[in-house]
Amino acid sequence: MIRGFGMSRAGAFTLGFGLILLVVGAVLLWLCLYTVRPWERALVLQFGELRHVTEEPGPHLKWPWQQVEHFDVRLLRWDGEETSTVTADRRRVHVDFTARWRIDDLERFREAIGTIPQATARLGGPIEGAVRDEIARHDLFEVIRSTNQILDIVKEGEQQRELLAEEMGEEFDEEIAVEEVETLAAELPALETDEEGRLVAGRPIVLENMLEDARRRTEQRFGIHLEDIMIKQLSYTAEIEDNVYRQMNAELEKIASGLRSRGRERAEALLGEMQRELDRIEGAADRRVDELRGEAEARAIEIVAEAHGRDPDLFGFLRRLEAYENTFGENHTLLLSTDTPFHRALRNITPETLEPADVASPAGDGDGNTEPAE
Image (cartoon, rainbow, N blue to C red; front, top):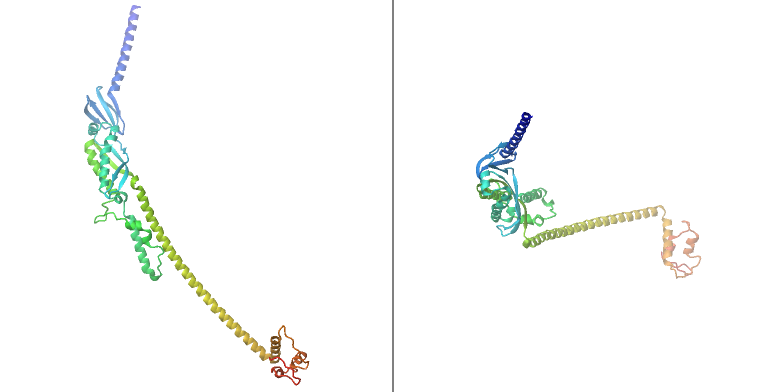
């Protein structure tokens, strides 16, 4: 019994000691093992001094008394606060910009800044200073515009109109004057270029100069690399915004007035052309009416003459009836003998009984009666 009891105590001691070693080993392993993820770099420090930099991802070992600091080496974004600045042509503007950066020198970055959250505050001063200084060296249109495309379009349009005017000559009629609708582009200066035609001013150049200036202020000092700087928004300040809108309204009103004036001129010209065309049509119609009336009258005379030639006696009889009708009015009373030529013509209407010579003269017969003249 005593021997068996002693073996149990030894086994329990061995088991307990093994468990203690296992726990101590796990703790030592936990203290000595560290992992670097693919987008990280690690600094191994011993009593505050740098021992080495771990760049390879995966698990690594260190001494228990050493510390490890992890840093994200991916491309990081920095957003600054909107700031106010003045351009070279004395235009005050609000600028909202951002930048992208990454850690380039871990040791220097840790000494100059410390941690990535602290970098947000430390980078604001140099980047904002670079942005302010660069904008102050350029006019507003150089900060905003990237190309001379709008001026090229205006120039190309003028060349096309000149060619069209040369081809069409007097038939060329430009409805709207170029100067009336392109005043803004006409007053806008062109971006400066070098001898090879490359731009030496403009927004890309401004951003490039901003980036170079900000790199000089930050990279050697903080151990980082600035990838780029971008302007998110550029706007006028509230003090001059109303003036800018009034100027824009005045320009647009000028364009609208020019369009209305040219429209009225064009309308008057069209109305004049329409009236001239109407007068021409009416004149041609009147001439045609006169021609048709003349032709009709000539045809009527021709028909009457032809009718006279066919039956002269009947025509003479009809002419005498017309004379009688014209002579006797509505309120006239005339007493005639039955032997007058008038009654003879009514009694005998045959050509043999008609005597044109008797009725053609207003002289009376033997009884003293008169007949109306034919």
